[in-house]
Image (cartoon, rainbow, N blue to C red):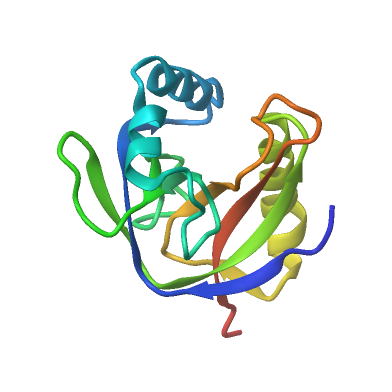
Amino acid sequence: MRKPRIVTRPAFQVVGKKTWIAGQDNTLFGRFWEQCRAEGLFEVFEQLGGLRPGPQTGGVTLGVSCVEQDPANRAFDYLIGIEHPGSVDGLETYSVPASQWAVFQCHGPVPESIVQAEMYAFMEWLPHSGYLHAYAPEMEVYPPGPDGSSEESYCEFWLPVSKNAT
């Protein structure tokens, strides 16, 4: 896995639908994506944003893990959304704080490629990087391209970081 790029972004808004993820059961994410697909959420996103990449992330769709209160607690709200500057009836609004992220590339089918990137980020890169997990959300960023089932799929895992002061 390649070294991540470090990016700094100003605060921005995301609108979408959220659910509670309790613990380490990664199947909860996939089930929530399927539920949102079945309920027509992605058609709503298309109407709102025309499937244009967001100005801060470059993503058409985002998976936002709201871990900013306690990054060590793996029970949190998870939001599937898009960058959007205001509120939308029927959708949750979430404010992503200004932050710095280490951006890890994920190549291949989802969720395997994201899980692989997260494992590398947390177990190999972060402990030796000079950074700490910052109090901001972790994000999956899905740019335009093949859907997540393809070997040609590409997405990114954004890990919020701050420089280790020690």
